Length: 109
Image (cartoon, rainbow, N blue to C red; front, top):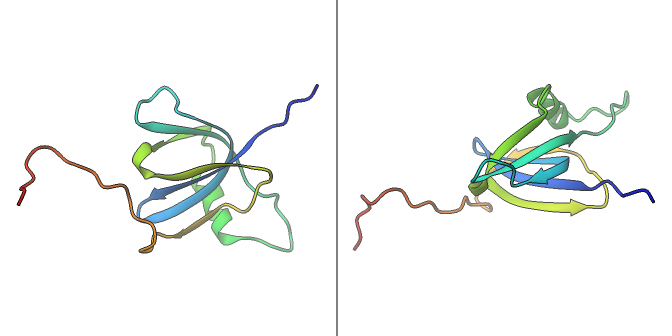
């Protein structure tokens, strides 16, 4: 019996922007505090329509077998029935990073 290959949509913060990519494999990997993403998927090249955002992502992730996203940068991971376009969008005010606590030097009122 053939097994269905899974497709995941991963949205995460990167340098003030929100990246949305599609991949075959997502796991907690061997690095604590990171999500491992591998086997990236991009749409097929078409002579009629070229998406500049997806082309930028293809260039950025060229020759990358797998990459690691810090856990606090992940917005969501969805298993989807079909792949959509990968994209980069502005961070905007609607999506806020998870608040972080640094050291013990904070002042409290």
